[in-house]
Length: 450
Image (cartoon, rainbow, N blue to C red):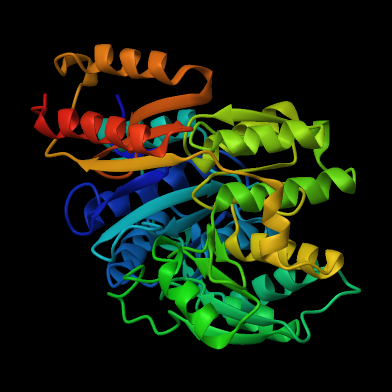
């Protein structure tokens, strides 16, 4: 049973267990203890998004790491994929991200990258928990010159910007393209505008004035309607909306129609297939992706592999089987030939490159995939719900699945990052699947926590 880690690191309300300075310090000590198994002086990168609570957690993590004799490299606000990049480019032993991604500002989280830029596997996260709760580190206290030191890396943002720009095709530019860019008042505010402007685009920015409390607030990938409205108002060619830590992307076309992760994956997969760059002709995505994406891949002559929800599981499957491209419906896109994790800026550059190369609008490109109607319902709960104990719940799901047949799906799962149970119903009849989702949602809402 996990005590701290969920599907994407540790997450919760800042200053309430487990997102306390005490736990953050212990996490820092545990990471440092693990990396010290290798010889030599060690370094760990720490970056964050723009949440108010990031300051206290950053200092607590740094204190814990230094107390174990490991040095800290502080990069300040930087997108999650940027921290993965800096970790590998500086040959650091690990990278730590202080962010709750798309959650509201009062939440925060801790995500950890290994020295190779990949998120820690479940086994290592379990080892960190064991080190914290077993008190195995209690007597390990380096002294004198063996204590670690912390220093700031002032050019980290510039290094990441150069890395992103080098991904865009050398013979192309964004000259003459008008982009609406929403940075969600998050970690990308000091990076993304520079990337697209320096490549030649006219950029209308939204969500670039973080105050510690407005991250993800009615803006960014969670609220793409703001971006879409601005595209229609300004006549822009495309809209790009990033989330608070910059690892996911949602876009809209020149008509203001929002385009989700599944359609972006379809467009990018087709491009990779055409250039023979999609390894094993396979796209890796999760159980949440629309059936229409699977059909589109089959028509292209490729195939789709599904994993459980979470970009880390997509990446694990890609690494295990030798695939090169994958992602999530929510907008995490992973181009493993370039970087080790989901990167919203990188995904946007790949998409814009395809638009330029094919000389087509986004509304034309996304016609490659037709979505099945899909209803998503998030049911907030007061505690842990055991669905097997909810009267007639599983029987009701089985009955609904039989009615949907092969032209529909039902997925019910607890969120790994917040007290929510997610219900997804997919099928050809929109009215019918809405009724099904509502009924299942009501059954969950009435259930008593165990």
